[in-house]
Length: 60
Image 1 (cartoon, helix red, strand yellow):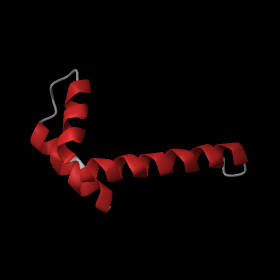
Image 2 (cartoon, helix red, strand yellow):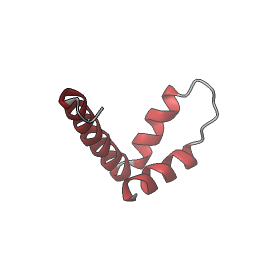
Image 3 (cartoon, rainbow, N blue to C red):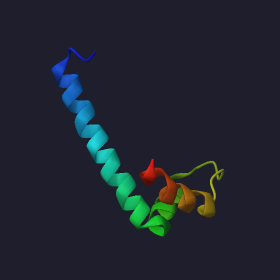
């Protein structure tokens, strides 16, 4: 896979975008939690958990 330069480039772009998203979520945990909860069709997620994840995940 790493010999496929197009794949490597796509993954680098994906990881960069993902990190930007996590950074934004960490800076705006209420908004991030609201977005996730709106998309959750199962009702399994809670706002408090999502806010905590938004604050913890960017640090890892």
